[in-house]
Image (cartoon, rainbow, N blue to C red):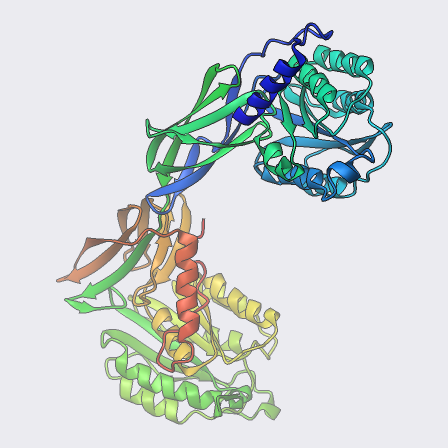
Amino acid sequence: MRNALIVTLIVLVCGNATAADRGLAALDPGELRVEIHSPSTDLVSTGGELSVEVEGVASTIGGVRFIDMMLVLDTSSSLRRTDPDQYRTIAAVGLVQSLSPKSDTQIGVIAFSSDSELTQPLTSDRRDVVQALLDLKRSGGTNLAAGILTALDELKRNGRPESSRVIMLFTDGMSNQKKARAAAAQAQSQGVAIQTMLLGENLKGGFLLEEIAAATGGSFVWVLDPSKLPEAFLNLRTTGVDHVTLSVNGSEPVTARLAGGTFTATLPLQVGENRIVAVATSLDEQTKESVVTVNVSDASCARLKVVALNEGQPALSLNERSVEIVVDASRSMWGQINGKSKMAVAQEILHDASTWLPDDLNLALRAYGNASPSVENNCTDSALLVGFGAQSRAPIRRAIAGLRPRGQTPIAYALRQAAGDFAGLDSERALVLVTDGIESCGGNPVAAARELREQGIMIHVIGFGMNNAADEDGARLRAIAEASGGLYLSANSAAELRRALEVTVGTRFRVWREETVVARSVLGSNDPMFLPMGDYRVELDSVPPHEVQISLAASEELMLTLEKERGVVTHSVRRARLEPISCEDAIASMERSRNGQLTSATAAPPLEIAPIIHRG
């Protein structure tokens, strides 16, 4: 702006005349106004502090809510000589692209030579404006008045109330002074500032442009070297503001980038209250400030883990728990997984499970489809192979080894038969169905699952080796689990089947926030739950149920341990600090980690337990 002022003084010395002498009264600058438009008053941080772009408008012309700007550009044939490399276009495009993407600025384009043309009506689409600038031609004479009047018409049609209305007038020559002054007077009466720029050495043209700018509250810039136009356009103070500084909580002020009346700067904020102050200084050294208070809350994710101990030992339940495994032994289990039949894989994993599952877990085994060949269509082919009892592990291993896939898939019949297997048991009761297909005997497994739920038996379903099976099949199996309040999991490898068994044999729990379940899992799964800071209630589906109130802080891991000793259940918490991270990033990181582990036969696979993670 200092360079522009020096040039103006040179013009005044050479011309030895004032704007009033030349027919227009110089307009006193209007009231300086400044307003911060963003950020909003409430922000969240996932790292304890953050940087934020502050954006707003400062102006001595009209309002500061909007800026409506008309680029009125000379396209006369003389520019072929004065600006052969089209720096005018480069400069105008640079100004448009420098405006903050957040600013609510409308821009229109007027091309004038002997006459004028509205080549781009007022729009907020910067791409359309840039294209209009690139399409400008060079031919004809110089008619400043026509360009100004066409711009005024467009501002009257499409300009917004409470906007700062600005015309940026560029030319390389002289025009009819009387008509140009009359057009400037009309702009003055409509509260439109005209910023003027002259390229070249036309002294009379300089006097006229300086006069028009002064009379309308604008500024005048004289550029002799066309290569300096891009810098001059960016430095032109289009709304009468010289500079804007920003500070937060009394920090050292930062000078904002000022373009087209909009200002932007990046400031650091911290968790808590942040008082942002924007101070605008006008060309005549008025000052005005705008203040916004931004409250930043720390939304770094917390991680919750829930474990159980029974008489000092890791446990899947706090109470006696009875789990019956129902195995699909239908003919489809001959299907292959990595060169082995699905039945062979299931036999291996179930055999191992009988050894590593806790001793206090009461196990039973039922199968269907293993007694009759499929051609017999035996829809009552289901039998309890090993009942509940203290010495069931060895018989279960022998029964598993003897399974041979043969028959149909009577899921509904098997579930109803399994209900009787729990007779006389007062413990927690659950059924784990391992199947590679859907009901084949016309039964209604969902209805059967509801019946078991009424009897206090929860059903978990493991869809095993279904791979690319139709989504409809998976949905049908999921419906069985949901009808009893259980889980549905998909397993397509030995490792995934083992993991699914680990997850389903434990006691289920839910995490509540007020009256909404935000996460659920089972004891023994060891899956962390990522949750925003806040107060929660952990509810265990035990007999009797247990509830624990917890409070999670940002960037914290909370380990909740439920322990039963001598019949008494207590709980304890252990807290540790985490690196700040958003819940979305934490979820993505865990999923990437799990996906990367799938190449390992012993890795814990991703399971379809939804939702074990709160995402919002």
